[in-house]
Each structure stands twice: as structure tokens, then as C-alpha cells.
Image 1 (cartoon, rainbow, N blue to C red):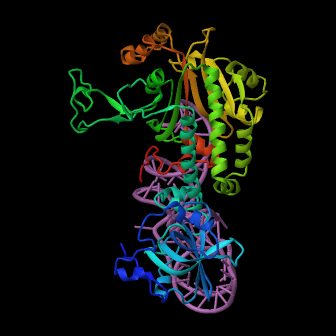
Image 2: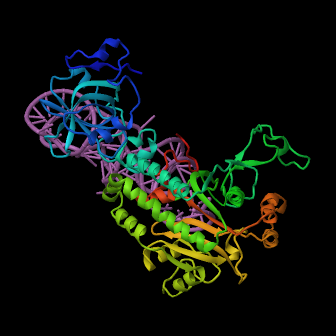
Length: 492
RNA sequence: UCCCCGUUAGCUCAAUGGUAGAGCACUCGGCUGUUAACCGAGUUGUUGAUGGUUCGAGUCCAUCACGGGGAGCCA
């Protein structure tokens, strides 16, 4: 790494006395909120500031140089103005798109049109150069596919800067939503030995030697010799653990990574993604649905409030309907139909469905899209699905044909939330486990929850990345998570 | 995993089976308080890989790899 050089424009600065170990005016400390570019842009002319960050573009005139500097703290860049001769030419020569620099100077009212305030620099420290002939991020637009190939650098782009600021704010909003309501945050385990979570293929976790697997007499892999003494996997859901906690803390939520080993190659699937799973005791499906709606509206409103500049960018460059949609969703009531009603709507739609519709079939993408994009044009909650197409733990309705399941469908991305009221009756649950030929011995602790102090309870799961897609308008889920893991791809 | 489409310069893309190009980036020069700056000149290629057809393949065929869209699975 190259040693930084301070260029003080002829002035004698205290920091230049420190010898080779050049530092900034504030002594090499981290960026505090008050010294971020976000704060600097809110400052007033005459203030002396030091800005640190990465150069997005550079424009030169004969008598003046312009840099646009970003430190990630906000969407806007800080324009740095360097009058010719103030900074040594050899320092200027090291500054190009991608370089990391530190600029000290005075805030002035901008003489140009694009910004109201700018930094007139009298000292520049180059922390790290970026070779112009090889630095892959150009000033011009890049395709999302190309940026994905340089995931270690794409966060410096406008788009991904906005994406990950929104992701951070959204995560905070989610915690705040639940914490405000007294929900206990549960860290559900990442490694699990319950191969019965039933939400898809799982990644194995093992310390066994793959070249020399221990075998049982029957020729099966002998997991009793493995690290956990039995077959272990990465979690596909924290729901079962959340149910345990709900029957102790009443209202709980999980928020953590989840893993699916499905060979899904779509713009909506990841092998590793983040999920939020609230679970509420003394709650039925209506309460569940109400919370889901309140939840989505509140976190959307938070992002609208706190990420205005980023959202404006998405609306301008990514998807022109984003702002309108979000404001609409935050303000209006969700539609609610039962599965049976939804089927009736689809049957009467007069369409040639690729997958024919009749009571008992699961809703396909085309059906979900029709309901949410064409019939109602807003999020739709579908409840009370046929028992045959839903998971064993969902509570059986009195009609014995349907279960207390709900899916929240959103325009453009389909299912964004899936949830249910859980079967809290021990005998009914046991019957369903047996009817589906599930290994009941694996569910012993889940069944015991129904044996000791059982209570009605319900919950749902929200995929964080699906929500991110909805909020930002980004079309591919791989572009709303920092370093996506998908089949055949985990480079960074 | 299935179906369709694609892979050519650093990036985005052109190129009837017949000499591989443009814009941007980059380098140099000019001009200007510039805003994805502008003007001029210049550099840049194992056409994804391996076979095959052909006098001749970026182009046609086969296989593979990677990417995109759709579907399934789901969040």
C-alpha cells in the first residue's frame, strides 16, 4: 500500500511535522457523524472542514479542478474545488475516479449550478490511488450484471450506495417496529439438527472427511460420528424456535440469515437470504394479518421518511413507479380475500391460464400477479388455503378443508409474506404429522409445546430481500444483498 | 432442474459464410466554474471454451461453461 502524502499548498501545517506518518486534521480518527459528507453538505459557508471519501469523478479546467467525493453517508456527493496551483501537480496527478482522498478546506457557496455548497480545498491527502487504466468503475452507467462481477467495488456506485443505505435503514425500521411493541428479539440458531423444518432443501453442516466417510452397517453415512452426533444443517427457518419463545415471551421476532439449497435460478431467489419472523401468542389469523399490514406500512413509511434522496434516485433511474407505489401502500388498506374467493375471481377472469384454476390448486405466479397487479392494484392478503397445499403446522379450520394460512402478495414480486395461525391442539397436530408421514419422533419438542401450556399463536415470515426489491424497484434479488450466494456463485 | 435468448475491445453494442467496427472509458493535446463537461487525435481484440462442417467461420452444427428472461420450488 502506498503511503499518503500531505500537500499543504505552501502552508505550514501542524500535521506535516509528524513526519512520514501523515494524518488528517483531526488526527486520524474515524468519521464521526458531524464530519461526514452528509453533515458537511448541511454546513454553512466559512466553516473549516475535512472531507474524506472516494472520488467519483474529476473534471478539470485550466484554472480550477473539480472532484466529486462520496463517503457513503448520503446520496449526494460533495464537490471539491481546487484552484490551480494550490495543490502540487504531482498530488493532483494521483487523484482520479476511485481514489481515496482527504480534502481540507473551507466551505463556500457554490458558484456553479449543481449544488449549493462546496469545499474549497487547500490541502489534499491521497490515501489510495486508483489506476485509471484498470479501475473498472467508470463515470458512465454500467449494467447490473457487470457490477455484480465487481461486487467488491459496486458499493461505491450511486445505485448500490442507495441500495445499501436503504437496506440498513429498513433493517433498523424493522427492529424499531417490533421493539416499540415490546417484542423480544430472538437469535434463532443458524445450525439445526431438525431436518423437519419442511421449507426446502438444506445445506449440510459437517466436519466429516468427505474423502473417507464413516459408514453404518447398512452403508449409510454414520452421522453419529459427526460433530453434532447427528445430521446437521443450516437453518431454513427460525419459526419452530420462535414458537418456543412465543410461548414464553408472548411476542417475539427473529431477524437473521436463512439458507436454502434449492437449485433455484431466478431473479427472486438466493441460497442465503435474511428473514424476519414474528411469532405472537394469543394471536389468531386476523391479528396476524393486521400486524403484517401494519408492519409493511410502517417500515415503508420509515424508509420514505429517512431515505428520500435514495428513493428519488430509484424512482428516476430504476423504476418510475416506486415512489407512487410506496406512498400508496403506506396510505391505503390492503385487500383481503380468502383463497376460495380468489379462485372465484380467477375463474371469472375469462383468461386462458397456463395453469388451469379450480378449487384445490395452489396459486401460480400468473394468478398472484393477476390478483395483485390487475384486480386490486395493491397488496392482497389471501387467507384460508386448502389444507393439502399448506404446511402441517397451520391451524385447521372448522370446515376441516382449509387452514389458517395467509400470503401477502405484492405487485411485481408476488409473495412477500407467508404466515399462518399455528395448530396449537396437540391431537390435531399429531394427526396431521402422521397424515403427512412425517417422522413424528423428530417433532417431540414441537409437540411438547402443545402439551405444556399451549396457546393460540400465529406468525409470519418476511423475506428482507423481497422487501428490498419492492422498495427500491431493483429487478434482481442479487442486487439488493451485499454479496449474493446463488447456485454456482459465491465469489466474494 | 426445464424452456427461450445471449456471450465480439476495459464497458455498452454493431458486423449477407469473404480485410473485426462504433460510442464511451483510457492516453496525449486544446478549451472552458465544470456537473455522466466539451472539442481534436491516438491506443485497445486468442470474437466464452473445445470439437466439427467449409476453399474460407464472429457468423453454420455439436458439446460444455458463464450470464439474462420465463417456469418450478419458495421468502
